Image (tube, rainbow, N blue to C red):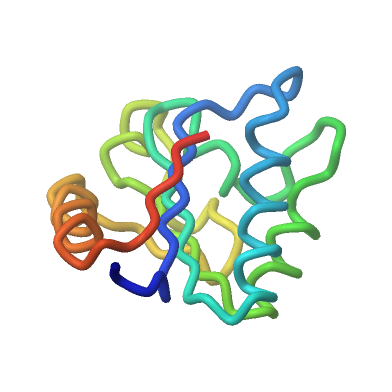
Amino acid sequence: MTEVTKVLLLLKNMVYESTSPMETLRFANYYCNKGLDVIVIIFGPMGVLLGKANKCGSPAYDEKIKKCMELGVQFKCCKLGASIIGMKGEELIPGIELIESHEIAEMLLEYCREGQLIVTL
């Protein structure tokens, strides 16, 4: 059995009434504290909202994302999802990388080939 050393967390829906965004950040924090390499992919028109800087609402996610980044969690945002809602790269929380859809598809293949953990919330 392959040892899990990397985790890919996928978030497609950023709805304040949903627990998915908070669970994603909590999972990222948990796995990072276990010494695993963690990447959070935010995609889809609603998912990319998690990466938008200075958004209003409760809970305030910006600080939680920054704390995860300080631990070493990487955040990547799908360009397609962002473009559909008219969001530009400069609107993202600093440190979140914009990537193409095909890069997400390749990461999924890579993690599957390597027997690594992929979680969709």
